[in-house]
Structures are given as C-alpha cells and as structure tokens.
Length: 201
Image (cartoon, rainbow, N blue to C red; front, side, top):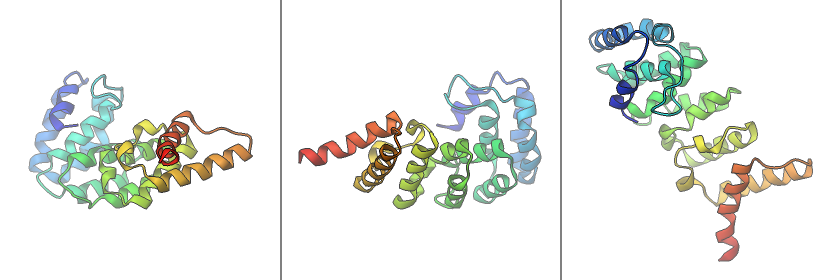
C-alpha cells in the first residue's frame, strides 16, 4: 500500500476539496491533525473503497493525514490512537506501515491485540506486524483463530508460521475436539500445511 494509491482511491469522496485542504494544513501545522482526524468520517464518508480492498474511505483519509505530517509521526500516531474511538484506532494501525517510524509504535499493536475488538486485532496484524517479536506474533495468530478472525488478514503468515505455532494450533485443536467442536477451516488448513512436511521427513 502507498499514499498515492490511497489518494487515487479517495478521488470520489463526498468532499475531496476538504481532504486536500486538510492535508495541506497538516503539512504546515501538524497540531491541526487532531481536529481533522476527528472530522474525517463526516467529511469523507465511511464506505468501503473498491480499491484498495478492505479499506474504508475514513481509514484511507486518516492514513493520508498521518503521512502528510512533516515529522513526529510516531508521537502523533500514539496520541491519535490513545484518544481515538475504535474507527480512529483502526485507521492509525492501518497507517503504521506507511510511516517512517521503524518499530516505535509496536506498543500500539500489543494494545490492539489485547482488546476484544476483532477489527482492531485484524488491523494490528497487517504489514506493520513484521515488527512484532515471534512469541507475541504467534499469540496474536492464535487469538485470531480463537475469536474467528480470518487468517487471511495476517500479513506474512506463510513466511512466519513455524513449528511452535503448529504446536499451539495442535493443542488448541485438541481442546476443540475434546469439547465436540471443530477448528475453523483456515486454521485447520494451516495446521495441516505446518505438520505434513514434518511427518514426511
């Protein structure tokens, strides 16, 4: 995902002039981002965008506001996340891979993963989750399985899934089986892919 792609997707928002003006203002007056961030859904709408898939108009516009900042991206992201409602938190999480922040905002991922809001959990496991340490990442994947979040939202799943995750999934599958319940199809498929090479070796 790139800011240019998000800008292109937002050409049809209800008030594109407002968004253009907000981006220019944030670039020269960073403190204004809090006001614009809160107003974004009302001015740009909340509807899903056809491209990029999975993004809503307010998420994309808020991500662009963060990228427009001349500096202090990590501090702004943390403030907006901590003060925001669920939709604003999701927008911050989705914006993180677009910002020059390194691993500074990993604590926001930990916070999102601890919540019971499955949409926040899903947003936390996008491309920025590459900064999560492996144990925390495995726990987050298992939480997806437990709460019904599709594993398709987990960026880099095929590359990061390992034997320890397989062990955790197998233990969870055993618990579900003992309770007369089945694993979600995507989790069962992942477990098969992780264990078949081991049994064939």
